[in-house]
Amino acid sequence: MTLIAETGPTVFETVESEVRSYCRTWPTVFERATGSRLFDEHGRPFLDFFAGAGSLNYGHNNPVLKRPLLDYLGGDGITHGLDMSTTAKREFLETFRSTVLAPRALPYKVMFPGPTGTNAVEAALKLARKVTGRTTVVSFTNAFHGMSLGSLALTGNAGKRAGAGVPLTHTVQMPYDRYLGGALPDFHWFERLLEDSGSGLDHPAAVIVETVQGEGGVNPARAEWLRGLADLCRRRDMLLIVDDIQMGCGRTGDFFSFEEAGITPDIVTLSKSISGYGLPLSLCLFRDELDVWEPGEHNGTFRGNNPAFVTATAALDAYWRDTALRDRTLRRAATVEAALGELGTAAAPRGRGLVWGLEFEDGERARAVCRRAFELGLLVETSGPRDEVVKLLPPLTVTDDELDEGLGILSRAVRHTA
Ligand SMILES: Cc1ncc(COP(=O)(O)O)c(C=O)c1O
Image 1 (cartoon, helix red, strand yellow):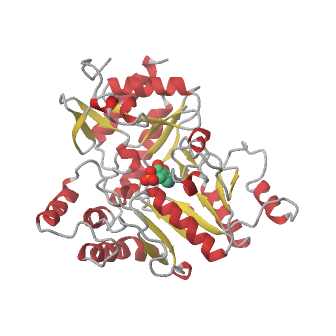
Image 2: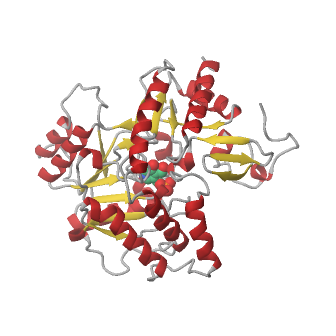
Image 3: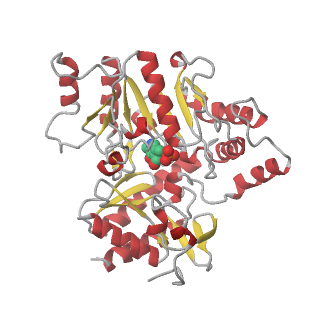
């Protein structure tokens, strides 16, 4: 089924680079969006179980966030301010402290490294190396941490790595939770390399981990594995960085995805849904004693996205002053798991909160499911090293009816492609 009228090449095809990708998965022209739905220019609705790759946890154009944003813009509030002090930034920092840091007794300073997730990862790497004076950073099989060179060196996917054009250095990959199918005790290989002066592993500055690998195929690490990792980092003098760019801001239930495991990372990266509105904003959080930056040592033009501060403050006020959103997300995990479990796919559905993965026998089948879902009015994307996993990432604000509707469409798409 073709949704773009066949009237010759579009401006997207003739002017925009071949690098474009999501527009190939969803071949229509989107015009507006509200809540959990996008509409194309023909008025056709699409239920959004992609949520801006995790950037729209509170849905599209959420009125609770839109009103303060419109008021701010209407009042000529500062839009661009580098890292100048502004009223919008003050309100954000005060609200972040009172709703996120203080209730969890988290000892973090907040750095604004640049607008996107990969900027936060690069800042975390630079800081870990500066603090420890070491260069090697450990990441895990099937990790995804971004597309700039430092982040790409941590990323597992061979296709993405191949695009770098230069050697990706100063990183070492270790097996993620269950990568070896339980063949060895957790961290056996990692510990062995660390304790053996003949192993060739330079003592790492830090270890970076996603608690649930999103792009890597929706692989949730067990809480005990994460606790084991935190313990290993403490015993072996390595900083622990949790990359919460996709799984933070309530995606797994709690505000931070590592809360369930009861660990406190040394450094945390946050982006995607922190602005709440899909506006670019990212944070690098680190323990107070790691704040060894010289003024301006790491800078950038777009660090203080003030409209994003306004929507981020509104989102924290609306959703993180109590546990209602968290509790609802955790309750819904069971609904989604049960519905997906009935689809009889290659492996049991896996996920936490409102991020779920459905593994198929190969990427071709998973892509066919996404194509059929699109035709039926649902946006879902694939992930995993062979694109073999259909990833569900609905807005956390999705209604019960919308959740049922999306799961119903997915079920039809799976049956259709069997
Ligand atoms: C865990 C994780 N880290 C980093 C990034 C990179 O973020 P960005 O695409 O905003 O640079 C992503 C993006 O998907 C991610 O999922």
